[in-house]
Length: 328
Image: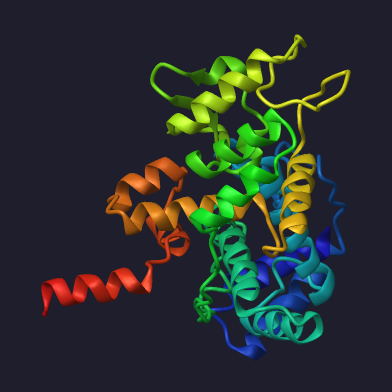
């Protein structure tokens, strides 16, 4: 504990003192602190430095509405950094973090995008430490956003979707494909849907997205017909919109949905079929057909419009046709 106190003081004074003065200050602190006994509850005030900054950071993010999945990802990313660097939060400097990111990419062979995601999480963490006065200045501030190459990801064509519908062996799978393709919701949002969330008259449903934020999404006439047919054949009492085919008719899980659409894709030999690709397909088609990006952002439940732009890949043929129409 004494070592942590010394490190925090040294870190706080590092911008004001030269190397020789820092060494002298450290020696003086070590000598003086040897004379006293310090515990977390000694004196009238609790020593704040012994509190766990990672746990406190995660608690703060939880209050802001971060999902359990995101909190776990943040925790694992931050703890992996501490484990590799081998220093406490007051000792870590910019060079430590730069070397960590570089070595992580070399060892794991990950993309620039993955490294930038790690950088972003660490930046959020150290910025929070700075705001909460744990540290004087964030050591990752000088590590800027990492440039990432843009990869055009494929979407489902209308023909792909029709073939998937034809391959469905039951009404549940047919309704499942239709809801995924027409709403663009996340698979995690899909499995949380209940029958009462569906408004058939308005062809809309209420979903709970990231951060437990509710929003309204819409489905087409085909989805309405197939959903009504599926629900009319159900004879269970489960409130979930989508359940297993056999008793005891449990709510479908994310892995169950992923496995089901993957099986359909394998039969058709149309590449890897994944629930998230339906979302990307909807976003791309919506943009191509003229939906304003701000409205698509609301529909998809994105906090930042930059995220929406990453999903919506403009069809090159539409670019050519518009150019010829506008420019000549």
